[in-house]
Amino acid sequence: MGSIQQNINMIKAGLPEGVRLIAVSKNQPVEAVLEAYNGGHRVFGENKAQEAMQKYPQLPDDIEWHFIGHLQTNKVKYITPFVQLIHSVDSEKLLVEINKSAIKNNRVIDCLLQFHIAEEETKFGFSEDEAVQMLRSPEFSALTNIRICGVMGMATFTDDADQISREFTVLKGIFDSLKEKFFARSEVFRELSMGMSDDYRIAIKHGSTLVRVGTAIFGARNYN
Ligand SMILES: *Cc1c(COP(=O)(O)O)cnc(C)c1O
Image (tube, rainbow, N blue to C red; front, side, top):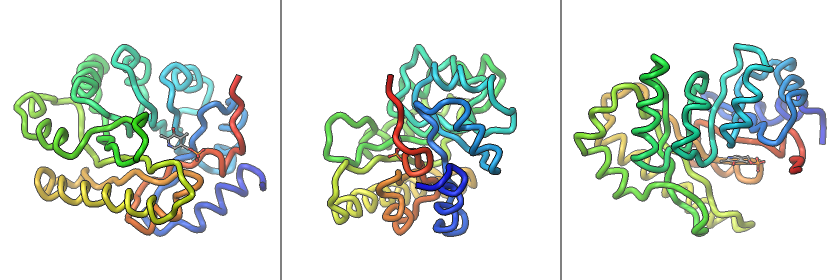
């Protein structure tokens, strides 16, 4: 592996125009984030609310923080003051809580709906039917301080590239269908967040606009 900066440059060089790289800094120290920052990178992803909240004040203000992990409603308040995009909205209850907290912070918060596209039961997310029901509901229309900017999903953890391709194709299909049904005139509904270190090359072939890459930038994570 190269340096953090070399890894970022190499990944970016392989991304089509318009695809953005989220450097996933979960379980990485502030120093590693700073190294990427000093190389010019500005967009980082965290998956734990407390960790994000602790890192945020120690790092430069012009970082764009994305939240990518399962978010419990009681932890929403930790990230709503500064988060730019929540990729992992997996229930209506969570969306309602984000809206409430956004109002308190006098902000409008950008969100993606997470879909369950993998084989594994352990992964979170809406089914397409659940999302359609929510988007049709008057309760959803009443959420003034959130904006739905697209969809997110995680493929099955497998070496089978065909399976990963199929799952990303499903997510792209959900994106297109929701866009047509609910967001045809929306300029903000345009993000398709899919692809991680091992599968982002497949994801960009299927129309990903946001790839979330950790290990291939920072190396293995330290869990302690
Ligand atoms: C950890 C994580 C990533 C990055 O995974 P890598 O395999 O390290 O690139 C991407 N998305 C989500 C939701 C994650 O939790």
